[in-house]
Image (tube, rainbow, N blue to C red; front, side):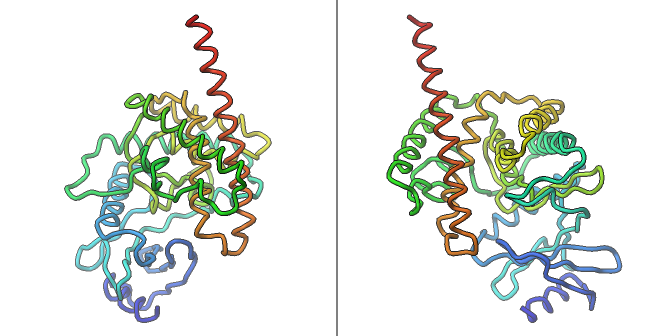
Length: 324
């Protein structure tokens, strides 16, 4: 790692300024403190994204920043490149955004004006979608697709959630049934669903609060997807908050104040988002707290899928009664 950081110093002309590891999740993130400001030097996990995917991510982030959205802005290296391969690792640098994460998953939120924070999250996601729709991606732009196959196809982006080894037989059946029904519903809704570039990971840890300002970070999972998926992601981990209905209303009001969106299918996407985590955690069971986290994710997914399917059945019966 020392050799990699030394080469990165040269590529971005960083001299001997301090470089300190501050986060290690999917990527390693180092804080660079230079005379011109602070930056985030990212060393990407090998094989996580192709070069084309990373180039596309950085190009999109640059456009969002240029259009006024508060997201990290890519910093080009001395030769003008957005990223480099250093010892077979992709390395890039972004502007450093101040503030602190909105919160941590499974811990109570601590904010004086919680509805205002969620109103701003809704506004930020609406602006991200609006800016993205007005932008023409460059040739060769490629990102993952959180579309129907990416969510409930044979090999979803985040894994075959119905094969999580800690599911009971009854839970497996519930998730298989939900997968079939949600597939039908996504086909039925078709083009009525708003689709385009999304952040796809607007969880607490990726929303930075700095006084009255809000920043959105971590575009690793961004790509094409349903806009309701972005809203569901922002809401899902907050369902346990005592004022969740108020927070949900604030987020939706903030979004709809800036951009129209049909939210009738939001419950479907809450359930879809929940099952993605059941798939995501399959390869992470042996991590610290991996099995505790798995139990929590399974419980939430089962609750949301059962609620959705129950409401769906009731709606179908009501429609049938009216038709008679």
